[in-house]
Structures are given as C-alpha cells and as structure tokens.
Length: 398
Ligand code: CTP
Image 1 (cartoon, rainbow, N blue to C red):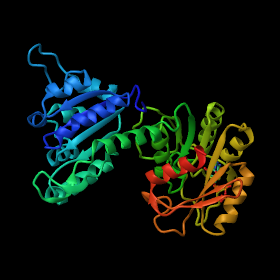
Image 2 (cartoon, helix red, strand yellow):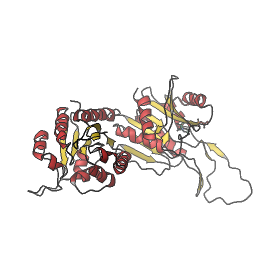
Image 3 (cartoon, protein in one colour):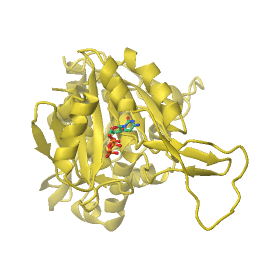
Image 4 (cartoon, protein in one colour):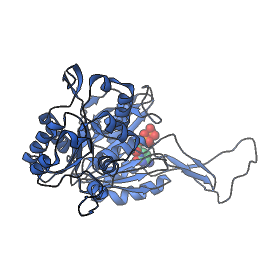
C-alpha cells in the first residue's frame, strides 16, 4: 500500500492502449491511491467510462459540464486535489496540445491547471513516435518538468514492430512509487538557501556586483521544495522566478541584507545551502548623490562584508547541516578544504572555472562534493537540475 492516501489523476486519450489504463487504475488503487479518471472524447471510443468508474468508484470526468444536471467540473479544483497526474496512454495529438497549450478538452485544461507533477506515457505507432514534431513536443514537455515514461519496443497495433508501445501498467506503477519515494525525501525539513549575486551600492545609480545568475541556487530551491521541504530562499538581485508554493522567497540586494535575512532564518532550519556569490567587500562610503567624474584616476575604499557562511558555522547546532560553495580558479581542492575548516561547513560544493560549461552563466554545472571528513565525490557535467539532485542526495540525505 505504498500509494496510500495519494490522489492520482489518470488521464486517458484516444489510443488502442487505453484498454491497459483499466489495469493501471486497478493497480494504483490496489496500492492505496485514490484515482480520478479524466478521459478525452477520443479516449471514450476505446474504453467505456462505465468500466473505469466501476474500477475507481468515482464518476469519470470528460466534459466541462455534466450533460444531465449541468454540473461544472472544475479543472482548477482537480489541479489542487492532485498529488500526481499520469497521462497514459498519451497520443501524439495530446502531447502536441500539452506542449502548445491547446486547451480544447477537459484533460488538457486539467493539465494546464495542474499544481502536481505530471507523468506522460506516450503510445503511438513507431513512425509517429520518431517524427520530429513528436520528438520536439516531448522535449518541450521535459522542459516543463514533466516526466516522460519512455514507450517500450515491441509489436504495435499496426502489427509493425518498434518503439511506441505504451509502457506496461506494472512498470508505470513502479515509476509512480519511485517518484513518491524520492518526492517525499525531504518531507518535514526546513532548508535555507542563499542564491544569486549581491549588489554593493556606490551611489544611487552604480554598484559593485558579480556575474552570478542565481540558477544553481534556484534549481536547489525548486528541487528541495519538490521533495517536500519548506524552503527559505534568500535571493540577491536576479531575474529568475520561483514556482513552487513551498518556497518562501526573501529578495535582498546587498551582502548586509542577505546576512541579516540568513542569520535570522537559520535557527529554525535543518540545513543551509549557501549558493550565493556574496561580495567580500562594499564601498566604505555610499554616496547619496551621483558621483561625478573628476580626475583621471579614482581610488575607492572598500570595507569587508560579514561572512554569512562563517557566522552560520559559528551558531549551528549539531543537528544542522551547513553546505557552502567554492568557485575557484587555482589550487581548487586545497582552497575548498580551507573554506570547510574556516567556515565550519559540513560539505563544500566545488566548481572550477577551468571546467567548460561549469559556473555562472551556464545551465549546466560540473561539481565535486568535499565532506568535512575529507571524502570526495566527482560528478560529470550535468544540467543544474540534475546537479541539485546530486547535491541533495549526497549532503542532506546521508
Ligand atoms: N559566503 C558567505 N558570505 C560571504 C562570503 C561568502 O556566505 N560574505 C559563502 C558563499 O556563499 C559560499 C562560500 O561562502 O558558499 C565561499 O565563498 P567565497 O567567496 O569563495 O569564500 P571566501 O572565504 O570569501 O574566499 P575567497 O578568498 O576565495 O574570496
């Protein structure tokens, strides 16, 4: 009963594989899930709603209104009720509509209103599956964060053999269980994350800043929240958005503001991941009026900012984990180990500017994780989302 209490929407579309959806619904219910079927008009040509509602004990939703009593089915309410949406089988047409927001049936409107993660199990003929439009649409769905359950190879309804057969219901249920296992891995945890650059004001129109985009810290915040954690994200000036309702975002500008927000939030958390590229210095004087060009040279006096990581390292208790980042250009390992010691970190995530595709501007990163114990793991170049998962698995879940 691993899915006990989980609310699952099973979306069914017009493919011959729809007959397997009845088995899928039954298996999900056997694992304890509550299943609501949403079916497209074409889906009903392949499997009758009577079979499905008999299995789930709930009326099947297909139209925006119930014809006999005019009840409106709220796709928005369904979006809020759901812990996981599984669309199986998903035809090429439905995948195309999902990718492009063509909301001409109840299933697509429900998908567009969905707050929960979505799994998509394609089912189609091998040539349709291999068509560039299908490949592109699936790529778009992946970029939305949807999980694609790859179709299997085998004999298809057309009697041709190839890739396109919907994955077997048992395997889809196994993926759903895996998903919830991973999804809940940070349930009841509270995590503080700092992200982005800081701007240190020189005068009303100028600042000293750095190239940090905030992407790594935001990817960590989304991944922690997706796994059930409550996240406090202290963000420097970045143009990124957060989408998960479990992320409480505090926008700051300077290192001092970031310090105050982080030190205040830290005592109630289980861990802090300090991803921000905090300015080490700020201008000693912040001019109230715009500085005027006066001479050929100008000397700017700077004052050291407080070190957030070092302060949290001082106040942390034995149950709290503290994870820092180090972006180095030379003597990487030695410098990173020194930071672990100086700031009393449990782990440091090392990325080197010498690695192609790693660092500030990219959507990818290549990291090594060094523990206080001296243990080290090196990872290959990956997307920042995958890197976030590696960091969580290797620092918060061990
Ligand atoms: N950090 C911080 N507060 C600061 C400076 C750094 O919290 N005022 C954190 C960063 O978020 C990062 C780690 O400390 O997790 C390492 O930052 P870095 O600037 O490389 O550390 P420094 O000790 O300033 O090292 P360096 O001599 O390379 O500047």
